[in-house]
Amino acid sequence: MEWFHENIDEVTKQMVSAVIEKKQKFERLKTIVKVLQMITFIGFSGFFIYVALFIVYPNYFIVSSMIDDFLNRPEHLYILLVLFSMYWSILFYQKKCDKAEEEFHALRCEIIQKSNDLWKEKQEWKERYKLFEWMKKQYDINLYYENK
Image 1 (cartoon, rainbow, N blue to C red):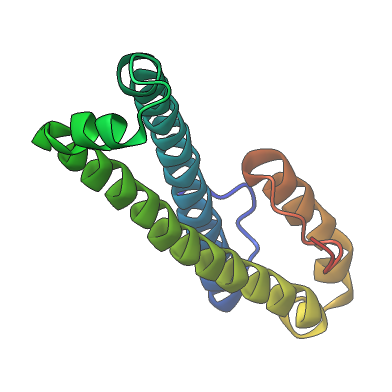
Image 2: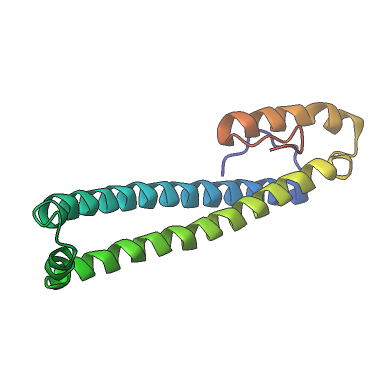
């Protein structure tokens, strides 16, 4: 990791690199969740359209015939199994994403709260805004305020 400033002590470097890693993990999981949501939505939509056009529409008034047509083809059940597995994976990754966001936010808040300890000298305190600006510009991490 390339640092913008060489006057940062080792503890601060460790905390900043940890918050960057947490942010990257959170962003990666958020992307996975969005991709899975899109794929699952397209899959459910396509399957719904297929069922509507090829099973419901031809057997419009005969419910038992619709059910027979649907259940007589095992690939329908396999497709449903895949779609619901994808839905479960969305829930799984969403939980991981929420946990990663909480960890990132907690570490970010810890850096903000410990600012007085991390930048003890007056000159370091005045220079810390350079790190904050760099973090905001490079990684979109706000170290000015605890609000998300």
